[in-house]
Each structure stands twice: as structure tokens, then as C-alpha cells.
Image 1 (cartoon, one colour):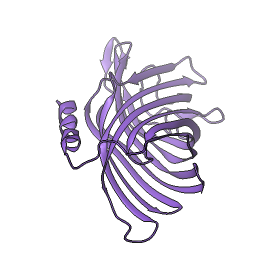
Image 2 (image 1 turned 60 degrees about the vertical axis):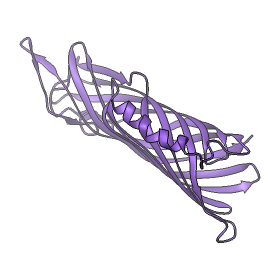
Image 3 (image 1 turned 30 degrees about the vertical axis):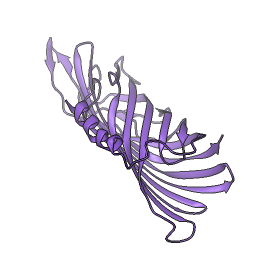
Length: 271
């Protein structure tokens, strides 16, 4: 039902005869990207006591599971359009591993017990396919200055995995979760340009149950771009990605109320 709702939000855009569904002179752009990200939030997982499954309160991903360090993420963008509207594909992978510090588990978390000192690994992969229509663009009210507004749809696929190992007891816990067939998200974009500088706000949002992810989703990116020369630009900005995860491992349910945020940058090449 929620997928139908999101589709209904997009159909009026593509059905409007006054809109250009695709840019006049499309081009291919490629942007390798690096980010400095941090996972934050809380999680819970059921445990077994005397043969009975027990629901446990949420614990901190940072202080309990030691997933509080900043680490690098790597990925890139490939698009076909005019640099604002058109089709786009994004991939990024974020690995967080804290090897010099440990966290202290606050409460039962699967096989982990209160007081366990753990070291953890977290991996997140994000794939996104976008389609955006340019809804409005200002004329040259001021020389070299433009404002653009667009809307479309983003289909995103997420995969996440956590491995937590106690350093002084035989306890360890691994979990993984991913969406079923992708998460459809309403995509909104606003851009201001005063050549050679661009400022862009990109927001994708959704709500629903998509298998291993269930709840409210927000993908927010605010960035600035500077044109170095014809066909080459550098950009940097802030990224916040909110994803609620859930699932089960060995018959024990778990849920994540988490987000990833940090800074990113890259080089854009017009091919």
C-alpha cells in the first residue's frame, strides 16, 4: 500500500504535459566519492533464559557495542542527464571497525551479556537508482545565477551487518538485515547556482515495511560544488541517512533505531 502511495506521488509529475521528462542535451557524469561517517543510535535483541525468550531494552550502539568511531566510506555516482535532472545510480560502502577500544554491554543482547567488553564490526552498503524531473528553473534574473527545483523517485537497496565479539568471555553475536526488493522513496531536489558555485539540497524520504527495514527513512544531503574547469568539478557536503532495521537470528528478534551521518566529498567528471 505504501509503495502504491509513493508511486501516486510521482505519476502526476510525469503526467504533466508542461514538464520536460528528460533533459534536452543529456550527458554522462561520473563522480568517485569518499566520506567520513559515523553510526549512531540504539538497538535491542531478544535473549534466552532457562528456555524462555526474553525481550530486552535497547542498548547504545556506541557505548555498548563500541560502534561509535568515525570511519571512511567509499563509493561513487553515475548519472545520465543535465547534471540536475535525469537518471542516476549511487553506490557507497561503509565499514566501521574499532580495534583499539571496547564497549561494555549494558543489557542482554542476543548471546551477549551485561558487562561483556566487546569489539564490533559494522558494514553498510547502499545502492540507489534515481529519476528526477526538473519542475522549475528561474530565468536569468541575475547574470550567471539560477534556481532549480525538481522531484522524482529514488529506489534504494540497503544491506547491513554487525559482528560483536566479547574479549574476555566466549560470547559473540552476529546479525544481518536487508530490504526485500528495494525501498521506494520520494525524491526532492533544490539547487542554487552562481557560476562557478552550486549549492544543492537533496532529500529522499519514505515510510513502510520493506523486509529488514521498517519505519521512517530519510536520506538528506547538503552539498556545495565548485567548477574547476570545463567538465571537472569538486564537491563536498554533509550527509544524514536514517534507517530503522529489524529481523531475527536463530529465532531471536532484533531491531535497530539508527542513523549514519558525516561529511563527504568527490570529483565530478563530465564524460
